[in-house]
Length: 306
Image (cartoon, rainbow, N blue to C red; front, side, top):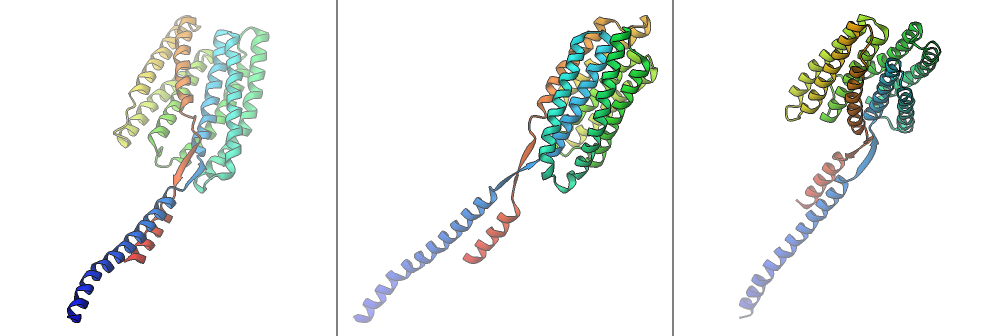
């Protein structure tokens, strides 16, 4: 009888022991998962210097377009807009400088390029002041001063182009980055378009048309790289801007001066483009999730409970 009682007690206690062990294992595994999840959501606010440098580039392009617009129209609002865009550029430069100390290794090329842009920027502003002064004194653009200004502009953008070529060896890493680069290419074409009727040099027209064609080539590459993305809006914008630029070219070639209505039509489209472009540079940092640490701890937790 005692033997039977002991046997029955053992049979009752055995499942309880197994359940307790399973409960311990589940608790350990849950603890491991919780630790893993806590580590996995650790985030670091890392400066993303590419869009910050891109904003410097974009606002400088916008400013040069306004400078040529002033020479074409004589409208003081264009000159004021030039200095407004320069102020935006300087704000973007200050923000970049504040974040540059946290640059990642692959971003050092951007930091170096930025230093070169700042040097060229000083030349650009000095050349603009001289060009505006002679224009206001003579009542017309003084070619030597316009050529000197354009040379200073080329100095800035030769540097930015070099930076992007070295940083984006395989092309923009995201869809947003690709769209930002397209706006830059389009505004470069606009700047050359304005320079043509100011300087009267057909090379400026050829450069503008080459930039528009380059835009088409590059966007085709981006569409292959990012097949799920839509570039329809910026393609439509480019078509309108190019048509307006070519209308301005035609009136200039026919009358030896650009029709103010054609200039105004192009200016309206460019202003709309600039507003859209600037919105793409609002975010200057990205959150990075730490994956490696969570994987290591998760594996350790599993091993401990196995």
